[in-house]
Image 1: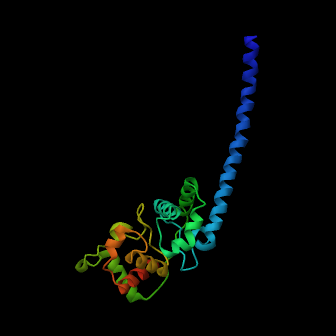
Image 2: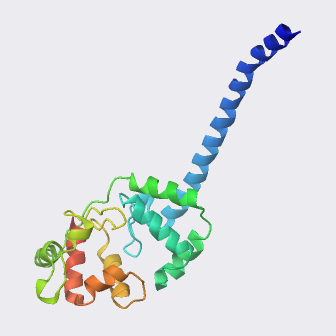
Image 3: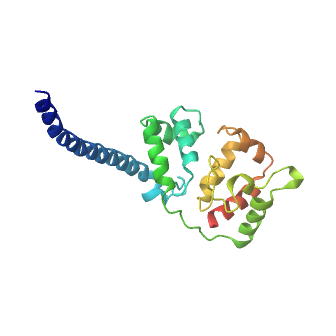
Length: 207
């Protein structure tokens, strides 16, 4: 009896293991479909593969994953409360769980970066100097010290290269006026003039 029982169990085991594979595949396909649906929703404003065609909405392509995760979580818990966040992102992020947020961040971080756009050479040159050197006379440090030598972003410090200038300018203004809570950035840019902001964002959009 014991040998017979052992034979039956051994014979049935491969079938059981084989049956698990289609279930795992099904779960994987379901996860892919769910992510695609969420990416397609993001694309409505942020463009295919995160390359936005509207200067109102930021490029997400090649953005750092930690930054995307941090911002989505701050939209979800409503701690990022600037007007655009309230109008567009609070409702969208409320529908996401932590797994969704991590998957979206990884997806957009892996996409090809948007290419830079041409602009006024003199303004771009001025912005490049501000980005690389800051303004020592007024205590403004180089942007590159946090955002990377080529504005590629570092961890939770976002990629700025190739980003829409109007979007970047709007964010600088809401941070400076404390409509968007960002203590580190507020301290850095509190003495930055609007002309200086326009120069920096022109440079960033160009690279």
